[in-house]
Each structure stands twice: as C-alpha cells, then as structure tokens.
Length: 517
Ligand SMILES: Nc1ncnc2c1ncn2[C@@H]1O[C@H](COP(=O)(O)OP(=O)(O)OP(=O)(O)O)[C@@H](O)[C@H]1O
Ligand SMILES: [Mg+2]
View 1 (cartoon, rainbow, N blue to C red):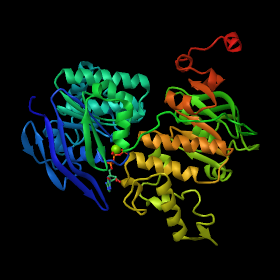
View 2 (view 1 turned 180 degrees about the vertical axis):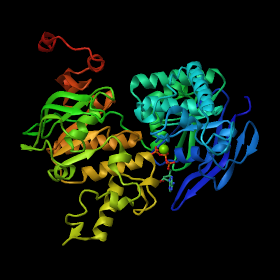
View 3 (view 1 turned 30 degrees about the vertical axis):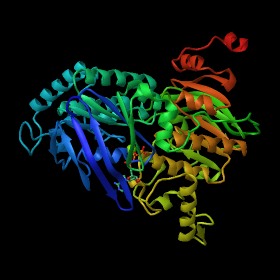
View 4 (view 1 turned 30 degrees about the horizontal axis):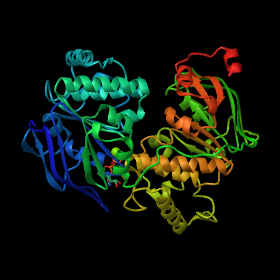
C-alpha cells in the first residue's frame, strides 16, 4: 500500500476530568474516504481538532506523507494541506463569501495590515468561482454569508478549504444539517475530490451513509480505537454494536395511540421571516393529548418559523394558536413554557443552551425560580445539583462533571442536555424540532423511547423532522409542510416514503385520491 497521507500514532488528548483521545492510531490513504464513527463524546471532533491544530496533543505523533510534523494552529495545518469543515460552522455572517475566504489569509498576497484592495478581492472572487465550477460547488462570491442556506454555507466552507490548498479534507458531521438532496450532492462532490487524488475524513452518525460512501471505517469508543472495517465486510447492526458496545434496536416499538382532548390547536396561522416574506401560510392543524403528530418536509419550508411562532419566539402575523383550550397566539415564551409546553429547538446554540453556563444550571433554565430549585426566591444549589446528577445518569450525558460548561460538551451531548431538561418537566405538550440531530444510534433509540413514553402518559407531541425514517417510526398522524403550507394530513398507516416524498416535493394530491384511500 502507498504511504498514508496522514498517519496518527498514539495520539492522546486530555481535558480536565476526561481523556478524550487515548493512544489513537489512525491512517488515511491517498484518494480514500475514511469514515470516523463513534458515540457522542467518543472523541471524534477532538481528534480532528488535534490534526487541524486547534488543540495540541498531550502524547503521540502526526505524520504527513511519511514526515513527522508539528501542527500548532490551523494555519500550520493548512500550510500542510489539511482543511477542516466544522460541526458548527465558523463563517462570519456579516461578511461576503470572498471576505470570508480572505480572512486570516491576507498575508500570502499583498500587505499584512490595512484594507484589502479591490483588485485582490476581484482576483479572489474569480478564483473562488473557478474552484466552484471545477468541483461542482457553485457559489456566489459576492453573497453575504447570512443570506445563504446552511447547505450553501457548507459549500463555502469546503471551497474555502480547497482555496487554501487542502489535500486532506476533514468533514465533521457535514450531512447532519443537509436535506437529502443536498447530502447526495455533497457525496458527488466528495467522489469527484477523491478522483482527483484528495483524501477525506468523514464524520457522521448515519450508518447508511457510511456504508454507501466510505472506503474504510474506524470506530472510536471512549477515546480509543475499537477497530477498522470495510463497508463490504460489515453492516449497520455490527457498526452500531461496535460503537455502543451493546446491541442497538434500530427500530422503535410502539403501541397504538389513545388520543384525548386537543392540547394544541392551530388556526389559519401566518408567519413572516425576518425579511417579511410569508413563510407559514394559512396553516391549520391540531395535536391531541396522547398522540404524536409528525410534520414532514424538506428543511426550509417553514418548519423553523412555525415552531418559533408556536413557542413565542417569533411574532404571529395572522391566525390563532390555542394550547389546552387557552389562546396563546401572542404570548411570550416564558408564559407558554409555564403552560406546560416543552420545546426542543432546532438551533441548540441559539435557543437551547447558555453555552457559558455550567451543565447543572442549563438543566434548570426554565424552572430555576420554582420549587424545589428556589425557596422564597433563593436558589437551592443542592437541588440543582441533585437534578443534574439524576438527568446525567438517566440520559447518559457524557460529561466530566456537573459543573462543566455547556460549551465543552460534545455536540451530541449538548443536544441530550436540552432533551433531558425539556422532558424532565411536568408537560402537556412537547414541540420537538429535529430532536435527535447529531445523536448517535444508541441515544436516538433512547430519545425515541422517551418520546413514546411521554405520549403514553398523555402528552401531545408535535414532532418536526426532516428525517423521514424518524417521522415514520414515531408519528401517529403525519402532516406534510411544503412552501409554508400543509399539503396533506394522514394517519401514519397510510403514509409511505413514496407518498410523503411526492408531497414533500410539492406534488399535490387530487382531492378524490385522498378520499379513495
Ligand atoms: N474544549 C473542551 N474542553 C473540555 N472538554 C472537552 C472540550 N472539547 C471536548 N471535550 C470533551 O472531550 C470528549 C470528547 O468530545 P468530542 O467533542 O471529541 O466528541 P465527539 O466524538 O465529537 O462527539 P459528538 O458525536 O457528540 O460530536 C467529551 O467528553 C467532551 O466533553
Ligand atoms: Mg463531534
């Protein structure tokens, strides 16, 4: 076999209270897509951050093309041909694509200080366009990053790495935020990059993707390498078992729903986005106690705005919302929370967590002023700690301590904190937007089971997800949202992937075809 482009030998990385990487050996061959799998908190992002120069390893060596190197910062990494696209993007929203590309890179051409010349900008814009065309990653160099969709931002990140000469590309959960079509497009790009001789490290929790695209798969558990496999010689079940260390049930079990009164009633709802475009248009539906209504749809069809309007985070333009029979249309988030409504938000960094707060406080963000956490308006630290200990145990949140800041948790463990907090309150309605995004297979199994338990205890659940498998396995009824409108609502037993897929693409059903069902 040819010399690996990247070889890691005995890499260890410690944080206070955790050994995030424990003597990791890893090899990346030229022209290879090597998938890195592992539970939430297994150490995947940390290992890649070491390679990219964001962290310095405590032990171990890094070899690039056979030569031992020291990588002190991302500029070192880029100079050695290593680029990385992060789990949470790192672009500056108020700058253009070109400006983002040049950020921190101004020194190679032109002066170190002072504004960039227009000439430089133009030249870079041309190069970016050409790179985009070459790799099937079309981007508009003049666009502001804040106006781009998530998929487009990711393209910018990839082009940015290529622009800086990446030969090895690290992609940390790139597909978690993509629509299925965007994920397919990304795979095509990845294949064309390896055809040119580049190499890719691909982190994901989606086992189907790994089997479809990887040449080799390395599994980490608790910071250690468990093993390396080839797709042809393994299966989803085997990979799941390697990751988790036990057998995982990939399909959830649930009995029939016993729906009661409506806990959420939405009438003719209209919502606008920040640019005053109508993005939720005349939407009506209800969710009853003890049932799960799934909202299927390709991301970006109004789901985010719908959920924000229901939970009081965005204003309602028209229509009415009732919860437990009481109008909540223009209530503030806290008033809605106090009516027994739980919300798992799509964007965990913006709405779900206070990253600079410790874990135990993040677990009582809505209840810290209520008993048992407060007595006569005094915080009861012991109760807050006890609560954290219980939830960490129950939800298997991997953290060195209850005082660890949310920002130091792995992506999936941050998500578990939000779900644990929301489901541990006394609730009547759960509004969950992408509740399992970024979670490993074992954690998805657990969260799905918990959502069904809530339903069986009489909670009404509004589940918004762009994962069709998740919608199909949890929902009792399914609505399809397309371009801000609900195109159909059906009992789950009448839903197939094909039928939902057509509706999600905006193909309306003739009225008699619904009746004929
Ligand atoms: N900056 C940091 N400070 C302290 N601890 C950290 C830091 N970054 C990561 N950790 C810890 O290191 C461990 C590994 O985290 P890492 O982010 O590498 O996991 P991961 O495999 O990427 O998980 P996920 O699938 O959830 O993204 C975790 O226990 C995490 O809490
Ligand atoms: Mg990670």
